Amino acid sequence: MAGLATSQCVDTTARDASDRGYKIAFAEDALADYDEDFHRAALYASVGVCGGQIYDSERIEAEPELLTALR
Image 1 (cartoon, rainbow, N blue to C red):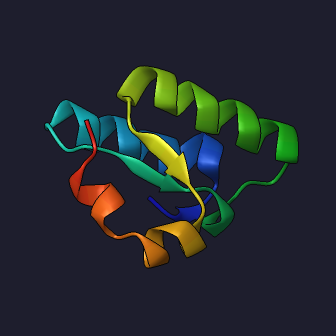
Image 2 (cartoon, rainbow, N blue to C red):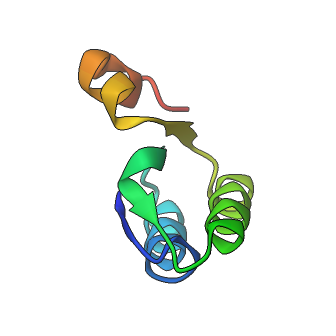
């Protein structure tokens, strides 16, 4: 996942995708929110609810196999 408004759009999309059986990966440095505290709280709450992993985009680019190994 990447996008703007971690606490709104990204969180809602992650929950919907998880409900539909998709595995979730968040590119932390490709997400933003209007407030850093809201961003962090929403990111870690989404992981708690949806599962998935948090990576930075450089790691995803260097190790794309991380995405196929999501639990």
